[in-house]
Length: 216
Ligand code: SAH
Image (cartoon, rainbow, N blue to C red; front, top):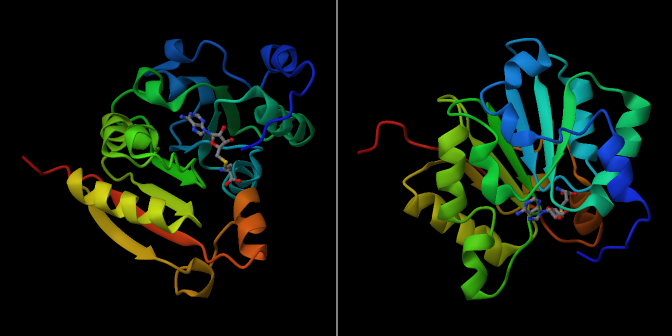
């Protein structure tokens, strides 16, 4: 993704009440932080965050944490949330690799991955957010009834992700190579990238998967 250097974004992020700054100290304390026992759902690689904001507005009984590594896009989410002030939504600026330092075992009810970076070179496969290395991290933080939904228009990345789900020993609940023309489209919330790519005519792929907790 091409990033503009948004002036002052780091400073604005440092000051925002909607950003968790000392995220590792939150491990095991997220429910206490939100002040309720509602499930906690996260999006990793949230970008400008519209998907998280739509979900948070629609589901006041779910808490949302949007994770994004770049200040320059996160700042857009913060600006919007500063207007909306959704009580069930906060953000973290971090690299997702360290996700298991931020959430405790079972603390995350659901994980969304939308239009994750493809990392097309084979030697970068471990950096893909649907690699088996990342799935193992998700398994460390997901609740037993939790799972992952992944959307992309990138077919090679989608096929790779299906293989990784299998290699990780996860259960594939459903998949489609054309979400918008499938039985699964009802209630679908479009992300910023989804709108952009589908308006260019690209079909959207989606899979839902979860760990098998009874495997050896
Ligand atoms: N989910 C949004 C944005 C997709 S672009 C949408 O669908 O519209 C992918 C985003 O993921 C970018 O903003 C990128 O900075 C972020 N990202 C990619 N790898 C990441 C990582 N390892 N940790 C945190 N954020 C990441």
